[in-house]
Image (cartoon, rainbow, N blue to C red; front, side, top):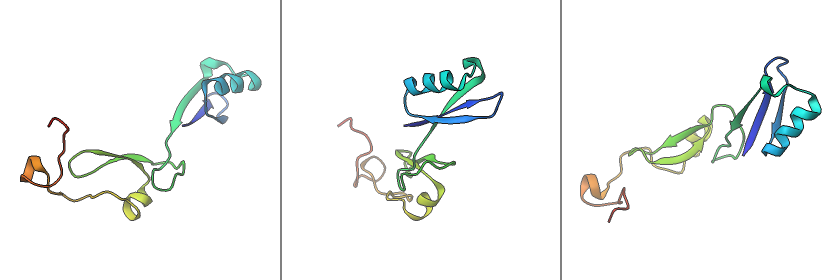
Length: 100
């Protein structure tokens, strides 16, 4: 996973991949830790890019299929967006839960 550390007073930001790197960035830049916020960047499961707007997507039945950017969701999405037959709703097709 990739993270961004942003100093809110100076608007500077740095990328990091571990908590150790986060502490090193704060130390070497001589930032006050209270002025810093961290947030996680998610990569698109389709193109593997770290792009703004990556969202968790779901199939028709509400099952999570991963995080995809808008472009991959519209053009390169490998899961069905329409209603597909399931054992629970149609009596045949795929099983939605693993209780059986």
